Amino acid sequence: MPKAQAKAPAAGAAPWWLLEGDEECAGCGQLYIYELEFRCPECETTTCLHCRRRHSDGRLVCVSCAEAPGQGDAHAG
Image (cartoon, rainbow, N blue to C red; front, side, top):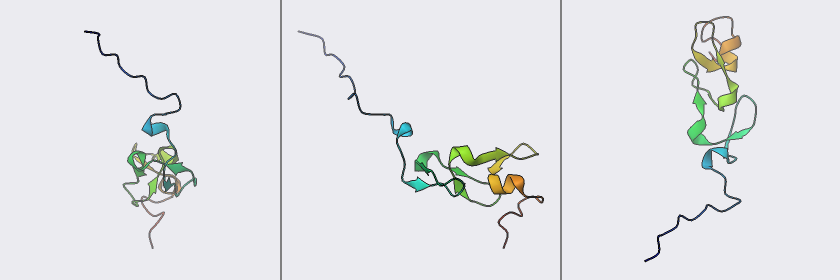
């Protein structure tokens, strides 16, 4: 009996994490995949992974919170 051979993926099929997503980043406007979004712990803004910054105290936050003079003041209303 012949051994079963693994089928090669289609030449045009890219992994899911490389596909263009449906969510729009609030920071840069690029589309990203929902599973890879970043949620800022200060203001709850969702952005793509490229729009996060390291705060002076070491936490990862969105661009607005990283540039805000006070801690978490960027989106306070």
